Length: 584
Image 1 (cartoon, helix red, strand yellow):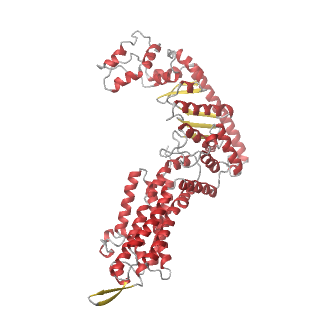
Image 2: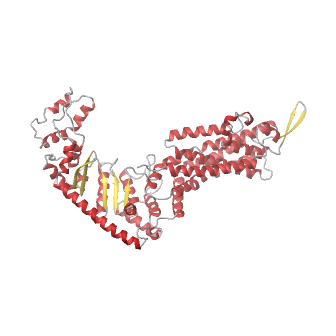
Image 3: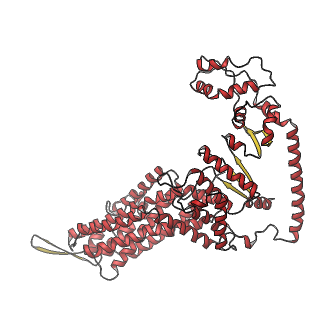
């Protein structure tokens, strides 16, 4: 049975109530990504592209295939077109049954009709079953329905052909008023039954006396027609706290539901369901016996396997990269910041001297650059938060392995933002400021800053993954940065840190980065100072030791930075895998 359920799920598609699409992609790219990720790997890319074009044509959005999806801040396609793009993303797998959760929500009347019209055309022209929920159907939309399942508080009020619905209720005393939308009328009679109340509302009183007092319990047409025509006015009066005897009806929820439960239509429906269940069980038992001789009956066909892990990674990296360069403000901002601050710091610390003040300037420069790059990683909170809901929807619909998405974020988002800006910054300041470039010191300084920046970026990404609310995530990220900064080694000598909280230094990325940069620069440097006619020479390592730094810890700090980067990457994936998913 579990295998049968799995096969049924593969035959179904689901479209959420909201449109969760990447705003910087075009319509064609959005649907093509879905096709590349979900269609069998045995199908050629050319065939997948042709299928995407066919689906866009079916939904009549082929003419906008090169338009960007857009967002609240950048103009794109309309709401109705976005809804059809979301539907197209599901149709790429050619589902036999397509479920939609309120596909007309948030759309104006015209776009709502166009969406439902496209669904009806799919059902008729391409032999698909379309099932969707709807709460406020317009009359022209209701006219497109084939079958209707009407619910009241989870109970079935009617199930059958839409064309027979009006007659069913009319025969039982619920005649839809002439010229009134049958959809609105059904909503009226299945909403919470108005009860007798007492009030002094003059607005409600004006309509109460019009309610017939000699209505038969089995004929409530006039009563509900009256309520439907004055529904808004009565609701307004009641919402102001002025209760009134709105209707004299004693129709209970159970009575309304029993109208269908005791009807011949319900008996016929139950018989059809039982017949289908018996047919399914018979077929399932036959298939199960066949499966006993052929173990591959319920196994996945390798030819129908979806995209491989590396294909998923490639598609997602391409999508992430497009998202970056089509919205370049963040990327360019980081690069521009590195260049401008590099020249500013070079001007401020120009031609640093090998004396005590030069030592202070060196430590100040290193602390500033780590602080600048550390706090700039907070932008990573936003980059994931805007994609969180997209990831949740795509993961729920089994688009890809969560690991492929996570690695694509590291490769195409974290690395471009966190790898190259530190290299640019260090390349600017080292020769101009006059820092120690003997031996491998320059290259080691670049490696230190890059590892620090990458580790901090992934640490912030973990916070973005675990904390859903952007404000709370930002506050927590700032606190983590501040605590790490406090134990970097500048504000407090580690020898004076209380033993109870000394472990804070061990988890401080700033500590390892700051100590490594300082030791790499100052170790082996002799500081010369002239005071009161005396020439004083002090090894830089002596002052570093006085400040609490371990002058032999350069490579140890590098290993710690590399280890913390690896640990954060693993923790980030575990957080994504176990905490970011759709709960149903």
